[in-house]
Length: 329
Image (tube, rainbow, N blue to C red; front, side, top):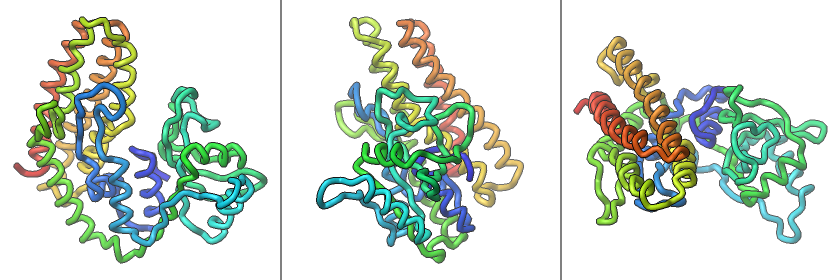
């Protein structure tokens, strides 16, 4: 099992790799049009995000159309015993099972607050002695790249109920993943999404962006909170959470994965390695910028926040240059 970038993407990816299907995490992401970046211009939920979660569903619909994506619902009273039997029955039939639950309620969670439900997907691979065996390639921990272990069946089933017992049984034909065709489709999908990102369309007069200006616009709009007696700590904490979880940070890592794995799409190995190293630094700088943005909000430090804005503009120009190189523009 390989460490993932986004939880559901990594579940799908690891099942495919387990079946010796040659595909990359960024392939799933771009084939599902996950790179679409949005900024709504509003503080609160879905302020800045990508379509990374929707990308998984689009990918499954196109390349694994026989899959079952549903919620387990009892006609009468919801029964833990019946849910357990359902999962065990699927395991005995060697079904590829992915379930949705809350990472904050997982026994091995060391990263997120337990006071807030956070959607998370894991792979269920076995059952033994009142415990389900699971794989988690994006575990909410800081000391492990992946988590492989067991969870008490009652704890898992109670947690599963948090998101209405949502599950995905992944079913596909190997012919859907012919390597040459997938590579061509990935390159086309990636290039289209990067071109759209670089165009930076303004969707309305309310500063709703979809593209590279999303983060810059977010920061510029938030400048006013330092002088309007708004809780900078609370706003920045939510913004930090969205940037880290809702797709902005992951989008950089998916591009990095694509550069690392795309091979023949580049002129030669040396050129690929050059772009790999350049974008590796871009990813590190984005991480540092988000951290400094959060620090500025916690401390109410407007000077540090203004530095973040200027550095964001500089980094965006550098990143856009590399993206244009990738799509050969």
